[in-house]
Length: 247
Image (cartoon, rainbow, N blue to C red; front, top):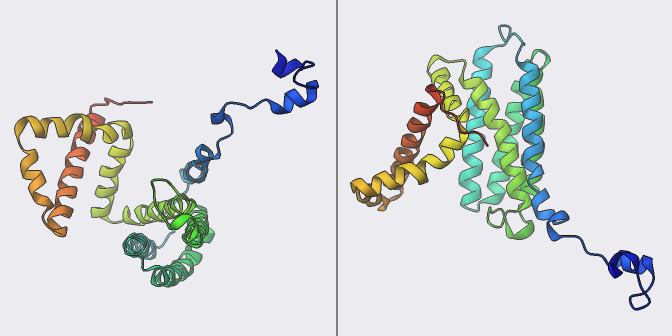
């Protein structure tokens, strides 16, 4: 009671009130940093809903497919060059690709607000993240940095544009549909590897074969592709049978 009402021992009521310390989770800013991902994702969802009833027949499919391919190149270059710590080259390549994508988007944007909005948001967040890269010791996830949040959020918008362009081709539409089946059951995709596949691999002894692929870069890459593919197939199996895991 003395904390809130004050007493002769603790001083006046006002002094005691300002000495009150709330629980740490109520004001710890670290948890609020996830809003740098959540809020852009919410915007993307709103734009997709608004675009749902838009007719894309008038859009130049070849130009849009080219935009999508450039977006995938932009993502790949940022991942590779940031990992290799070739920062100046990465900034230059990113600037050139953004300019090229901008001029292609500008020709389509009047008839396609989704494309314009995603490009503007993606370019702003990506460049902001690259400028924050030198802060907090460089981009890394654990502990997470501002650069990590902004760069990943920005690249996500370009991934969305890339899939949007990719679905215009026959083969690309199948890939996008397969990935969409995984996205509809995200919790299963998240836990299928650790809670289902790894125990089965250990029980059958197949984990030894998978671990033997760690010898080189390319075999390690193939190992990741195989494991991720198995997780995706399990997720699609559940999704097609409408067995969803919601949180």
